[in-house]
Length: 401
Image (cartoon, rainbow, N blue to C red):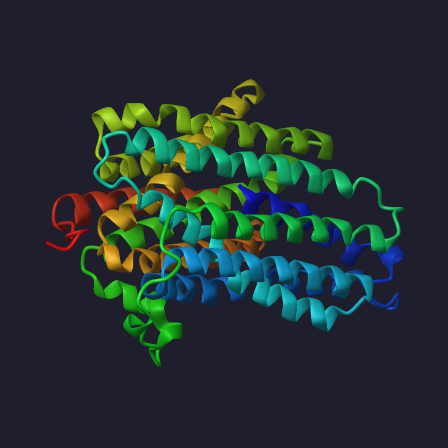
């Protein structure tokens, strides 16, 4: 929750700082197109850093211990946000780009904390009802609180630029507080045997290395295509609603809040799936549900039903996001949980960055094309995991004999 609050405190401010020439972060001679390009580059540096760093941090946690890595990476991200505040204060774009790369690199602490939580109480019958519920709930609470504060800060474009560095300082304090809490109160070993750790020459190829596990391949492929479907929806829906329904920005803000509500509602239904379905079956339900909801959203233009279909797409996407991580840990050896979930998260980040770029190009060809691509990805994910995982693949042992 702290990671999400800290991230969304600062994230909405970049567009204001870069695109509003009154802040003088960029030279006044820069055109709007140049400002947009540099804004996209700033976003991209974070995602590139996260794509590279997340599986590496996960691999290190398997060898050096999760408590040490979680507390250390939260600490380093907090320091990076302090450097971001300084870069904005002194209007240094080059420093900000470097700092954003390492912010993303060390922000694998989020997925590492998530991995640690879902690895607890492995044999407990209450695991799904408790851990999955609470992790999803606190993630969405962090998303709502952080985005609410962050987006409201940009409603005052006349503020001096040094005031806009305050959210970065706030994000830093949140991350530093999380690091202290993990170090002081997390009931786990500070470190494992350092002799177990071997620095691999191909450490930056961990994403490809994780496909060596036969049982993980269909899961990673299915997760990636489902991520593509859900991110296409969340990235493109504001553009679609503006062009198709002529929604004003104030209404779009209400849509964002409505989607957040459906994400918060999803954990309250986990007990139903836990009682009647396996996690693999839940992923199929999520993918099929996303596809059907998108089809209804595109074909039925009655505005009164719009909110129902928005809720359905967001709801099934929230279920898929939660259960995709659990499938990864169910089919990976326990000594490689950090690496496996780190790879899954890095694929998640890669898809997020790619879809953000491609949606605009697809929409330029045809207004409905991004949504059709999302439907295709959802259906592929459902059929792939049903045919390749349910029928053929068998889980590997999660605990040594």
